[in-house]
Amino acid sequence: MANKNANKRAKNGKQKPGITGLEKKIVATNRRARRDFEISDTYECGMVLRGSEVKSLRESQVQMTEAYGRIDDGELYLLGLNISPYASTGSASFGHIQDRHRKLLLHRVEINRIEAKLQRERLALVPLSIYFIGGRAKVELGIAKGKKEFDRRQDIAKRDADREADRAMSRARHQKHY
Image (cartoon, rainbow, N blue to C red; front, side, top):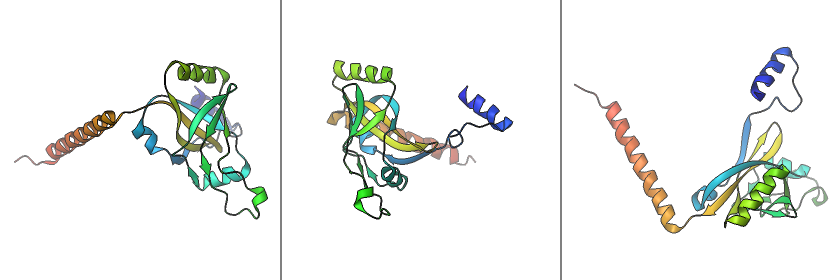
């Protein structure tokens, strides 16, 4: 529905500011999260950032392997996210603190839902990726449960079996029949 209305506005020449660049530009992904955790739900959160942090993110100067989310006093924070200082700032006073707690923007209902899940079960909030949509920095946050070693082995075995099946199908398709 939103796309339909955006298309109508584009045809009429009336576009809302900020709606034009809806392509998703991925800055960083946390590949370890998908390997080490079983992701049940994902949420898209906005981030409260300083100007130098945004510039550093645009240059993909971020490390998110040790990052995690936490709810304090009904607000959602991202801890352990390391955004390197922007190289072109003239002095350190215009820069930012690399490992500060960054507030995430999410609706109150969603924060309460996440908090209830975290209290019921032994789960973690893990950032999966950071990207820009329409000029705004977003974080994809996942509710995750840690995998055991045998779970990882099962995932590897399943992936290998799928890959072998795809190869066999490809060979069968490309084999010439005489």
